[in-house]
Length: 186
Ligand SMILES: [Zn+2]
Image 1 (cartoon, rainbow, N blue to C red):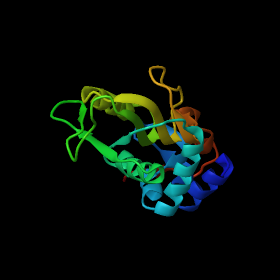
Image 2: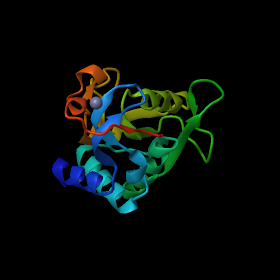
Image 3: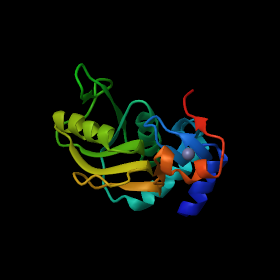
Image 4: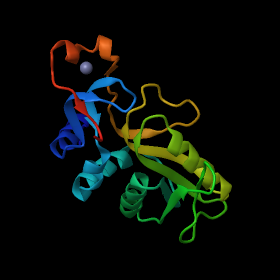
């Protein structure tokens, strides 16, 4: 499936919306990504994961993703690869821990995944949690890459790159057109 096909699927299920949005940062945007519309559709998520697999080498022993969305991606990717998945969750401090199931064993080759990556923060914490267990992070994969500037401390692949143009309210071309502004999460 091409990036255009994936984008069409994402728009079809409402995961990518076009309009005029007030982001939590106070900036305005013409596009909004609501990842849970994607995560609630296994058949669409599966298509995104198939595209990811064409971009990944391997071999991997295990897939690890962070709660909550990354966990669903890890489950699907591990299923298509036929290997186990583990899940990273918030720990007692700022970092993530892998505390359920067997976790990651010493020397395992690990694929770290996430749903939507913006700053790479949760990917970075998941990598640290894997390394804490003695696992070796071989690759990173995300469904949707929203990073305006790709992180420089790890390499990754994405199924769909979707960088949103954002505007300061006073410079917003959508405000200039008098399009109604939608507040998110309100
Ligand atoms: Zn605006």
